[in-house]
Image (cartoon, rainbow, N blue to C red; front, side, top):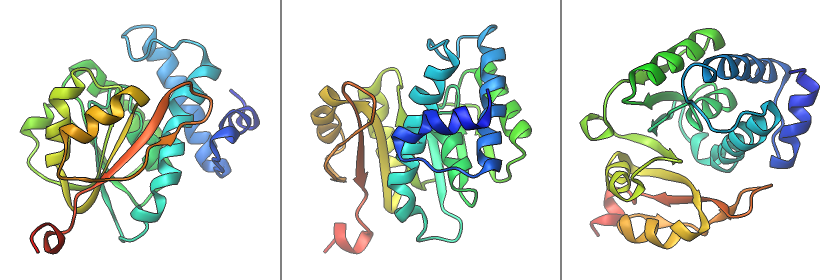
Length: 215
């Protein structure tokens, strides 16, 4: 796909990428389309819909989280159940200083993610081929999008957020109350509607710093 077309498709999400970043999206998209013919990475098949539904939503989240990410020299992020790499790899494209770990237990999906990382030529991006429950370290940002068994995974996701860090959920509006109830220790912000979607929202919760959680 031509870079100007990618930029136009991302415009409704408030995304402004430079030419190098747009080229990374084009490379990523090409790999996704080729791999998706062999393994089920996404049910969305149309390239333009992939750009808007997957890349657009991910870059939208990155834009809303950039202020928090900018507070550190090299912030850390975990993307749980990364699948085809959304939103973890677009977050990395948008914030090159981010150190991101993509958690994916499915072996072939993990192989795909490693291939994308190599093709994009990004540093400080890695794949953890295992379950989130087995991952030991916390991160300043934990992301969760379109993950099966959401109710079961949510407490694990919340436990991986470092003090002062954030959990970013890309979920349906009907899941907002359930998310807040499933991780009551977080300070939840108001959900933000995702452009071009009927009911998709970005819901962000902060894990209070230790001096706040233990007054």
